Length: 320
Image 1 (cartoon, rainbow, N blue to C red):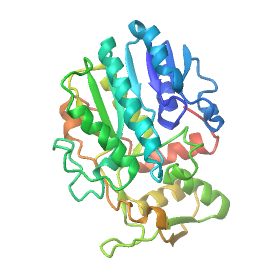
Image 2 (cartoon, helix red, strand yellow; image 1 turned 90 degrees about the vertical axis):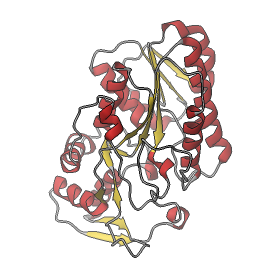
Image 3 (cartoon, rainbow, N blue to C red; image 1 turned 45 degrees about the vertical axis):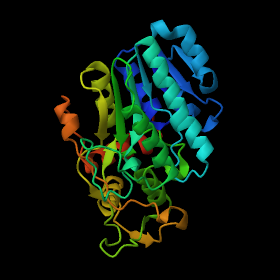
Image 4 (cartoon, one colour; image 1 turned 180 degrees about the vertical axis):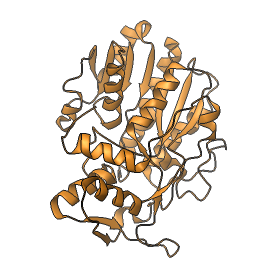
């Protein structure tokens, strides 16, 4: 069995879709299935079992010997989350317990970290350096960093483990994410409704409006990396998972307009006060460690990924 936590969410459900498409059987989906906004993500997927998050560890105790790998994608991912208790419970303690069960069952463990752990980026985005000096800007990033730090200190580990610092992921199955959805999805919806797109102004003199940069990665490319490590369990460690090429939000906006065949019309608005102090102006993954681990895949250029996402998924509300 392959266990995927966060299975009804954006990345987890897309991952399950690809696993099933490639012939992997006995997929076990773990999540809080009371959230009806995510039900369509798993609607037509043939699963071996669906396990409520609240009873996951009891289920593990009865099924440990049958599990081949756990892909721990589940987390509280709202970067504006203010409840330390919620983040500690889901992003730290739940992850620790899953890790410990993987040791007990001799199960490979792959998990989602986040580029939010790098904070402002002033110390760079190098996954080959130590992580002790990183200063995340929000509680979400702090919770992810806390688990990364805990993992680094463990003397006993699963037979193979890998953590992945996801950069800015976009693609199908994120329809339920509302404010936390990708800028591409928001852009498509805005342009469809109004013919124009809103981008954040810059509140720092060294950046022009729309020139803030992110390492945008298509969810299909991210899944290819996860499957590579699931199948080739050679170098345990913590890895960046972006493309290695930062692009501006203006680049992204122009790619959306082009994919929709609409003349560009961009309006710049202030960054909301509740996220302004924790806003990252630049992210770009160093990819050397990933390549040194044997991953040779290429990443889809932003324009090509945007065109596919819009024309084959967003316009049709299609799912992976």
